[in-house]
Length: 324
Image (cartoon, rainbow, N blue to C red):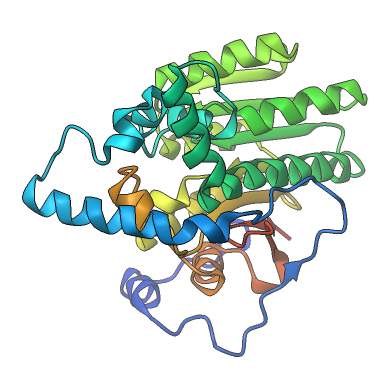
């Protein structure tokens, strides 16, 4: 037994991982309702554009059957707009997320800006991503305060940190309120690491962070030495197959300090996933809350020790897991 987790025979582990009914239908999944106003983006006029996005997605899907790798998926998307083209070319990366999180109007020609604003401010997925950023910041700050009630310091690791915008901005806000955190940001992309360094310098918290350009698996080594009491991994499970997701979170569970918190995200299936995959070249692994709960349970977190938070558009949800 290691850190309260009893290792199972390999054959039994594989059987559990492949079981479709490991999470019982009767299991209650705890969704926490947010009382605080976080200024989330709502549906607005989305209902007017939804059929249009679906038609465009089917058009591009059929177009790719004839031309497998077209120069432009849809001319009025990545043909006119430089920013839409950048999102398509850098899909599944921190750079694309950065373009969706932040308003980059006036960085393109007139029609390009109109296209960029239309798609990435009308799409339900883009608004849900910005909602996720707000929700992550809220949960991080909440846990910073709770951890300090029992510990001398907050020790945070962000895995696949990307730009680390949510972590760094929250650390800066915490610093203004007298809370200093000690953090490690891990990402495989050296450009992402450089970006997060500059952002932390801009916000005056660079001395609080260590930046590591490496794979997520380095958590085994880094975590044992650092003993984090909070680990954040957002926007990464969407690209990890089930078995790999379980094994990674098992490693996270092992190095997380006792009474520590693991915060992660997952995207749920939604009406726009065909648009994301075909027009934006951004395919993902979609899971519902029960499938995510299964991963968390197999990784070591007991069902009574994790809660789900869902942003209002119900596309992204966050799991807050406590190691007891």
